[in-house]
Structures are given as C-alpha cells and as structure tokens.
Image 1 (tube, rainbow, N blue to C red):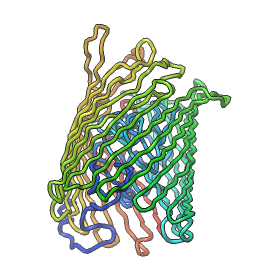
Image 2 (image 1 turned 180 degrees about the vertical axis):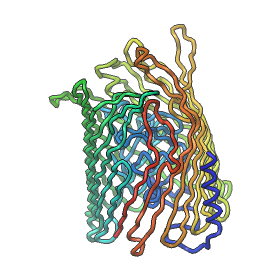
Image 3 (image 1 turned 120 degrees about the horizontal axis):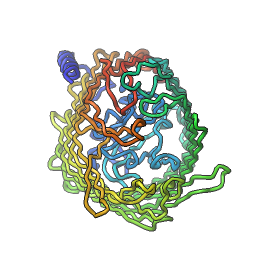
Image 4 (image 1 turned 60 degrees about the vertical axis):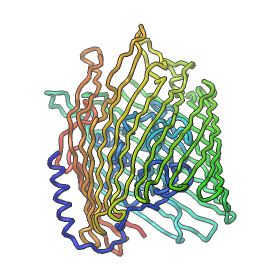
Length: 633
C-alpha cells in the first residue's frame, strides 16, 4: 500500500509545479450542470438531483485505459467487479454496496436488459462493448419504484453514442497488448438534415489470455491458456417526422466465444459460446410542458457450454416495454407516470415455450426541484406478477440545499426481485410457490463544494435489509428463507486542482451478514461478504503535462476477504478461506496529434506486478501492457 501512496504523492508534488494553462480537455470547475437522466427519468442537472449519481463521461472512459465495462466499473466508489483482473474470458461479477450481482439492474439507454437463461437473470457485461459507450450513470440504493425488479441495490445506465450534429463523424481504435490481446473498432455517426440521424459501431476483440484456474499448491504443471474472441455490432437511426417527435430504432448484436476451466485449481479444455441479439425502438414526444417517452426492447440470448461431459445449451428471451410521461406544472414541480411490461421466456430445444412469466407495473413519481432549497422525490409502484400475484414498492428521497454549495440528502426506499424462471420452473429444485425477495433501503449523506466549486466532498451512510431471500436448501429445493443485512458508508472527494490537474479519492466500508432460521426457529448469523472487501480505498490523479501529453495514475487497496472452496478431495465440502489484502496501481499515458483528432496511448495495469487473488483457485493477471491509436474525426 505504501507504494501506491508514494506514487500519488510524487505525482501531486510534480503536478503542483506545473504552469496552469487553459485546456479544452480539463475543466476549471466541477461539472455541476451536467445533465443526467437515470435518477428520476427526467433530465436534471447534478445540482438538481435528490440522489447522488456517479457519472463517467466519454473522455473519462478513454483515459481510464479500461479493457471492458467491468474493469471501468471496478474503479468506481461503492462498486466492485470480481474477476475484473482474471482471465479475459472469465465472466465478471458486479457488487454494488456489498450486494451481489443479481440485485443490480443494467440499463442500456434507460431500458432494462436481462437474461432469463443466466444465473439469477444476471446480464453478462461481456456482451456490451465499451467503445460504443458515451456515458455511464451509476445510481446506488433501491430504484425499484422507477425501474422494477432486480434494482434492489441500484441501477447502472449505459448510454450509447448519439448521432451528433454534423453530417459525418467517425471514430476508430486499434490496440495490441499482453497475452496477444487485440482490439479494433470503428464507428460512424451524423445527422442528415434536421429529420434523420444515424449511429453505427463495429468492434472486434480477442486475446489468447492465460489459464483461468491456478495451479494447486506444490503443482508446477502447465495449464492451458483461456482466451476469447468477441464481435459486436451496433446500429441506431433517429427519425424526426416533426419537430416534436423522435423515433429511434436500434439493434445491438454480440457474439462471444471463450474458454473456461473445470473449477478452482482444475484445468480443462472447455468452451463457452454466448450470442446476444438486442433490437428495439424508442419514441420521444416533447412539446412545451409535456414529454412522452416510449421504449421497447427484446433481448435474445443463447449460451452453449462444451466440455468433456457433453454439450449444454440454454436460451432466454426478455421483452421489455416502458411507456411514461412527464408534466411540468412549473420549473419546480413535475409529475411522472408510466407503465412497464416485462415478459421472460426460456424455450424448449424445439423452440416451443417452456417457462415464462410476466410483470405489469404502473408507477408514478412526484418531483420537487429546489423549492426554497428543498427537493424531494416521492414515488409508488404496483407490480402484478403472473405467478406470485402482486406487490408494491415506494420511494421517498428528500434533499435540502443548506447553501448553494452544501446539500443534505437521504432516502427511504423499498425494492424487490421477482423469482427467476429457473427458480420457479427449472429442472433443479424448482418451486412455483416462491415469493419475491423484498428490501428496505435507508441512506443519509452530505455533499459540499469548496474552493470556488473545484472541490467536491461527499459522505453517505446506508443500510439495506433484504427479506425472503431465495436460497437452495439441502433437500434440493429453492425456498424463501433467509434475511440479508448490509450497512456501510462511503467517502469521496474530487478536486480540480488546476486547469491541468484533477484528483479523485474514495473510501468504502461495508459490513454484512446472512440470517438463517434453524429447525427450531433460532437465528444463525454468518458473514455474507464473500469475495467483497470490508475496506476499499481508491485514488487517481490526472495531469496534462503539456497541451498534448496526458498522464493518469490510479489504484486501489482491498482488505482481506472471505471466499468459499468446495474441496474435491473432501467430497466437495464447503471450506471457508481467507484472501489476502492487496494494492494495485495502473498507469495510462496519451499523446494527442492533429488538433487532438489522433491519440497515441499506452496503458499499464498492475504496474508493480502484484501477486493477488480475486477468486480462490483462480489466477489474476500480472503486469499487462497495451498500446494503440485512437482517431476521432
């Protein structure tokens, strides 16, 4: 850990001696007026929101050096993505404020995406290419009142690139690095007059990788590499038949082929295929104080696992339709009302429907923006499920601007997660009598801006309780049995130290336990933070050394974590192991040419070649180097 702080301190001292000159790439103050849409489904500035939102813009994405969305999210406060440094073919598991991946909903351009064939309905982040992303908005805490099932721990809205204003714009990236890793992407976008816009992006990525499984202690045999190949295509058209209406059909296609091993410390020559097709359309009508938004998307996924035991094939279809409207009584008072319909299907091999469920949910929210310093969001949602019946959620998120630069905020919200199709009807332990998992979330915090709004400090406490947790029992059946409690606090700071220097830092603490009732009704409490650190510290510094040369150093510290090992030499009995604490440092440098249209960059991850473990029995990458070119025109 001392190495990490030594580098940060040295970079800060060197940056402080630089002459400050205005640059187009670095602002002089924090972007308080940046527009975000995820917090309330209504476009608001960061100053107006009643909930804290983390925003990652395109510039930050390019300068992060991240290989994929999982690595990018892993560097954010309150978010951990397990296996983000593992074999590049491995799936990545996201935790938000300590909650497991099944409790965070992924949105693409505001529309929910899900995979009924996946474990817990979790959508595979490997299906979304980072090069087509314009902005990511992260909203932590229960958001089920606006977004429905799966949003118990929050939502992550991945916003794709738009059409732009000029007729023809282009972007391309070509990079190569460690493990014979290659990435090539090309995109075009533009507007053809006032009535037609377009966006197109193609990405191809591959890597030979390294063995996912680690060698058992004392075993020096050579395990095979586990690589992958991924191809993604995205297209969208914005058609404006009038000044008030925009119709935007889109399609997102991804084909991923990768290798996987047999388990912890077990090499194997297995192959995994994932195909995803995601078409849809969005419609927007805006006139004076009324705005209507409608969206429909279909997600079709196919998963194939090929191993020595044969071939396993899974399919899932997810249909999502969301229609809502907003009415502004004044600039201060707004109301939003909508209805959401979701349909999940897992078909038979012959294409006939096997399992399916539906959710129909009307919802409404009342929003107050800065009424004598006071703001609030009050919402309610009623959910009608085809199997378990009905349930409801509510949200109350007040805020108060003590001064122009100090805001107090809090929330009291409830959430839910509907049982998945495999839990209700699947071949292993199905229980059609399952009820939804439900949650209550409480948070309170303060946000303040100092030094002429160049320094932002945020502190937040949270507590989340999930009831009716669905678990797989020893009698091989899914049941609603457990309760899960998590609490913690987050500290974050962002400072524009000058026109050439920006710094960020965060500290996260989280504690959690799972409460189970035994046969006599007694509570059994156990640690619930498997693979999640109690303490996490992160920091970054970005310096424009010259008008053309940018250097960014970031890193984080993760405390000890518990993990579970199902030991094959002990009848696969569950054994708890402790993963050591570790610190990582990454370095990115970019040099711009041709009036900032061409950037030559290099990215070094795990700069000090730290030996660490994210998942017991599996490898992580040592020092990796990537270099490339990025062109925008």
